[in-house]
Length: 154
Image (cartoon, rainbow, N blue to C red; front, side, top):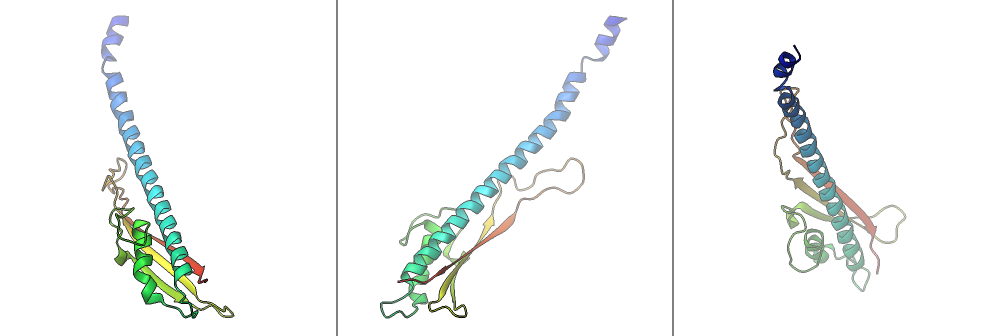
């Protein structure tokens, strides 16, 4: 009698393992993608702040006139590469076309404020993560937007 029960449950461990492995793989894929998303957004935010800092220090001429067209290309390079000269992009797919540099004059402010905005289309490792419970799959394709505003100083 004991032997008959044992033979009926021999494949049960394999079935339990395969079911639990689906859940573990799903959770691992989601954790990896969320970690990469957070990392990419943090890098984008840091680069936009660095670009705004660079523009706020270099946007005013010695005569205190705003020279935004003159500082725009270097500011875009700072956001994309981390340096005012050419270099490699810190985020794959981030180009100078994704970065805008503008100015605003808040009421009561003596000097303009520089606004740097960057939009980054995040590309996930796993384009689609299967959802085993419903027919809809998860997709982590998204666009991050980061903005930094700093007062122009000289």
